[in-house]
Amino acid sequence: MTDTAHALSASRTLWDLVARRADLTPDRPVLLQGDRTLTFGELRARAERVAAGLHDRGVRPGTVVAWQLPTRIETALLSFALARLGAVQSPVIPFYRDREVGFALRESKAEFFAVPGVWRGFDHTEMARRLGAKGVFEAYDDLPDGDPAVLPAPPADGTSVRWIYWTSGTTSDPKGVLHTDRSLIAGGSCLAHALRLTADDVGSMAFPYAHIAGPDYTVMLLLYGFPAVMFEQFALPDALDEYRRHRVTVAGGSTAFYTMFLTEQRKEPGVPVIPSLRLLAGGGAPKPPEVYHAVVREMGVQLTHGYGMTEVPMITMGAPDDTAENLATTEGRPPEGMSVRIVDGEVRLKGEAVCQGYLDPAQTAAAFDEEGYLRTGDLGRLTGSGHLVLTGRLKDVIIRKGENISAKEIEDLLAAHPDVGDVAVIGLPDAERGERVCAVVEQPAGAAELSLDVVTGHLRAEGLSPHKLPEQLEVVDALPRNETLRKVLKYKLRERYSGTVK
Image (cartoon, rainbow, N blue to C red; front, side, top):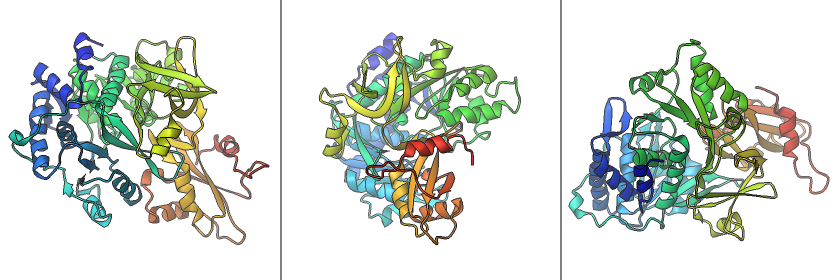
């Protein structure tokens, strides 16, 4: 990390970081989208005007504001405006629907809710009204605007909870993860330190800005003073023109992104799909070693993969100068300030980037051990060189394209179908998605034959988000169970179906 980046990483709050970077390089770009460019100086100035507009509407320090917005320059401006005010933000992934959004609004007690209106054919404003959300306003092309003279002093305390992120665990309902400005700055600093980027790089955000990766990545831009291209809707090959036009040097997101880039590269072997690209980087899903080797061999760029979660946005990361063996088979090393401990095979964490816990105090109490380490529920080991190898999960969570999916939520909804006697939902290894969702169903006597279309149609009707829908259905005479409590043995199902492709 450069001396400047190191000094900036000590910023007390996110707004402090924005202001200090704007003073250093006001005219350098920070966000690029289509033909639009936002500089660091404009980020500060425009965010202050949005903050003033929000203040005029009644948003004050500590006010809870939920927002469900796509990856746009306006979304970043709104988020930093809220950071300027010291409000509590509750970002919601744009493709969540009534079930998850309603839960997030109720649990966070949001007093305002920013939505994009009709986006990708779905009316978010109507959903917000249907859910009885408070203070609904649209924030897409137009943002609140006001005179910054009305603003109170920026927040000075970076250790108060000002962020509520949502993640699915082993229970049906999502969990509200509590973060501070300092924990998000620490996470972004970890990422920046590992990737060894410079002010000459051009990054890319092809993931939802409402994901924990949004501030993680933006902090990195602020520390190093380089820009990133934002993709509101990411699809290949359509997005390639933007990568090439802006001469992106760093791309990625998760395993699914790596395989998409590989698919494009294979259309013209030997011709770089993005000539300026030098590094693919990401995390959030398992990475098969063969994917690493294929990227390096066929695309001619380095691939560094890491390990993070909503509770700790950056835990370990592969470094560009790691050995090929470590980059292919490990999740990288923890940065300075992140303590990784293996207890009975479980990965446990302590450091400034670790969240403050959950909205539910009982979940917080269960998540931390007696020494203050976060219990991740992931199984792993540390190598002699300090690299982390993940070997499995205690939590019954499926990670598909970097997003956590609760198996129990899907099971509970499928159990209500008349042709389902019992069901187990599992994640199966998938080179494109990291994991794919597989429903294994035991049918009652006399039931009508099930198909994948019937199952997904039922789940859609129940309001389940599309990204959680099963991609594979298996119907069995009887689910495997243990001999004591007759608990379904999911590991046997994973062993049985891991080699199948549907």
